[in-house]
Length: 149
Image 1 (cartoon, rainbow, N blue to C red):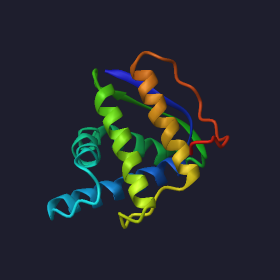
Image 2 (image 1 turned 180 degrees about the vertical axis):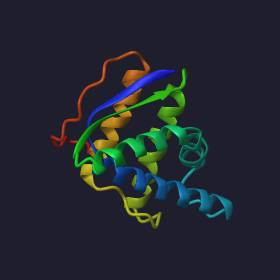
Image 3 (image 1 turned 135 degrees about the vertical axis):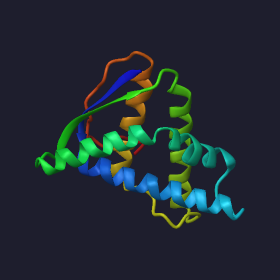
Image 4 (image 1 turned 90 degrees about the vertical axis):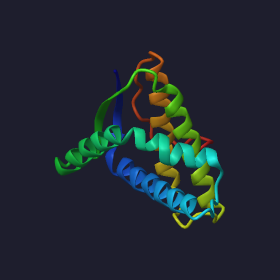
């Protein structure tokens, strides 16, 4: 197992991100069942199958964020252990989530796209997991807008 730390996570934005990704996942899953897939099979694979494999990780992060909000914190250090070899699956989920968000922005999904502030948290978290699963050190969240929200 590899410990991944998300330093200075804006917990309200993180919870909004989880809610959006859960919405994408539900919509992609339902549309794949009736054959009316508004997105490709790679998005179905990443948002449904691969994301489901990390349900315990998602729940642990969710619980830590809720506890932080209940304690009156706006930012918190969240941490969770990923299984060895999770880099590939994590990258698949990352790509699928980005594609689902683009599909939402294009009106192909009913779930709204994520807000720019939430997208910054998403990109930071995805970068952190990719870096730390490869042995890199954690870096704190930087709320400064970038050119690729």
